[in-house]
View (cartoon, rainbow, N blue to C red):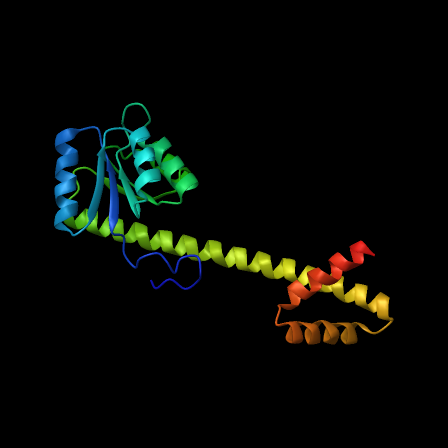
Length: 204
């Protein structure tokens, strides 16, 4: 997917920096080796969820790969913080596959779920799919923000238009033409011109 809006234009086409957290030393060393062989830049390893959250805040990875069962703060809680507070997608890498863990993963905003032991191909595919899902999420979020902004702008323009109708005793189309003319001459958006009309009406 190619980023298509201002919010995700700065995101890479594929993740580069991967944060890794797992409290099992031999397991995490194997994961890091696989990631490096795949060409990823590895941040970590972190031995618990709290450390993973701190590293996410400091290092700003593209994506995080977390175990679920970790001391101090488990991977599910860490995933919630890393995604909802730092907007970094998370993939869970775990030996647990029951429905409760899967439901909790979805609620935490997890974008992928890999079962141990995961092969190099599985990790590569899992991170790729999770990243595409994250880009889709960002794109949808931006579309919602854009739509909300357009609706807000439309409300402003409607309010300003009727203020002009009352002030100048002209028709609604004529008021709209005045707003458009002022927008062109001032090189400002109609919404900004409308806001100025509303603000001046408040002062009066």
